[in-house]
Image (cartoon, rainbow, N blue to C red; front, top):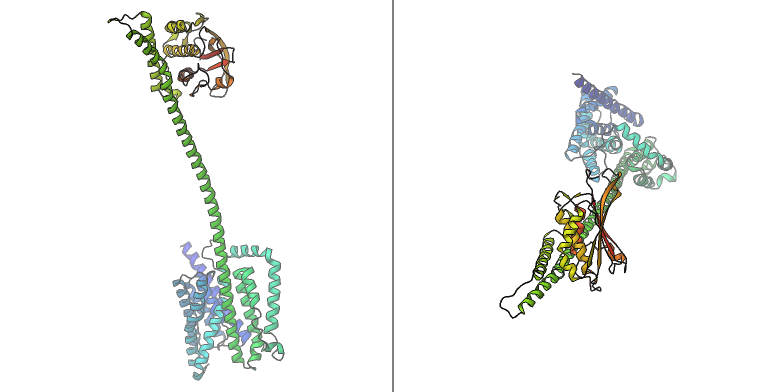
Length: 592
């Protein structure tokens, strides 16, 4: 109930405001022109009524009727005359607002289609309704003779049309905004705030407009100035307003020029009266034509500039959007390029690993196969039907096959993943026992190459939790690697000790821990520094050294085994001073 009363109260306030505006503007026209109930050259209530219905809704038509009805009564007309006059004005404005709504008219007049629709519907077509009703009303009331019907009709039509074209655009452009949500007062305040930087330009323009319009339209008919065609001199200033001051400044300037022209005619001065030799009716017609032309021109210019600004703003927004999109696309292209490069690098690395593994098959399997073939050829060369194989020859064949099996097992695993080696702890193991077993297994190789093993690993070293088979493989790889890459007569020393080192935990803290460090040291030719740094990686060995063949698959696997046990592996060497291969294994908490 409270909401309904609030809505009705607001509507009644709007109706009252429209009625007051129509009543006041009608009295102002009568005060200026002094024509009473007769047709006037410019009928301001027509423009006010149409603008009000377009802005606030057609349901407020009663405000127009009430204003015109009150004005007619105040001028001494009869009730019936006043009612017909009120109905003519309100129906004309109602139909104009309805037709404009059908063509999707936007009240701010910022589009050329809206300007042309407003001029055609509001300024030319619908004023004929009020012209017909008003002319019949004044003729029937005896105010206008029947023989002046057409002249009266044309005057009323032109008066309504000029009133709509001159006055209606001002409230429409200042108050009409279909896409704005803030109140009209706030919008006007914001527009005035934007005008402040151009205030000096606005004041200069306003001064020139008033000066030029006053000079032209208030010139005495007795002067030669009134005879010159200077009535269109304010047009450049209207164009200035359209280009620099916006649509609202343009329609405001058009209103001021039109008002000054009308006032000049009422004072019986100006170029229109001078050109018509004092004929007031002809001068009024010229004035109406001028006001209509300047009003339509101002609306078209302002709409064209507004549309251009809208296009420029849209292009600017699209340019920023395109720049953002281009930057985003560029970033995505860079990311995809980097990803593609990374994938290509991974593929290249995989191809390198494949080539290295194929190379390993050709090199690391070649030696044991050749050795076994030599033994078999030697046995085949004997003349006896039955060949007796000695234990030494049998051990050599077994060792060659074990070597082949070891290499094949290594190739079957993923050579690029440390996680491929999963140690299986064999319980507590003694490092000295594993070393002894390895030396016994390689006895024939040591004897063949005249290699001496000095095992300094103490039985007092703490036991470790590790995979005995894998640790033995590490020992075997390091010892056989030293034998293969050095001349016969080599001495290899095995040693071990417990050392303390700092270990970085996941929390970032460094904690002192005890580890077991084992060393396989030889007195051979040694290795250069650059070769030590990449010795445990998958790579082809130096082809210039006759002792270095293959790709070091065993050393790479040894590194995998030690890292999987949580230790480290490395080598310290200098050319001519032998090599010291070492690895570390962590001790369990119980052992410590």
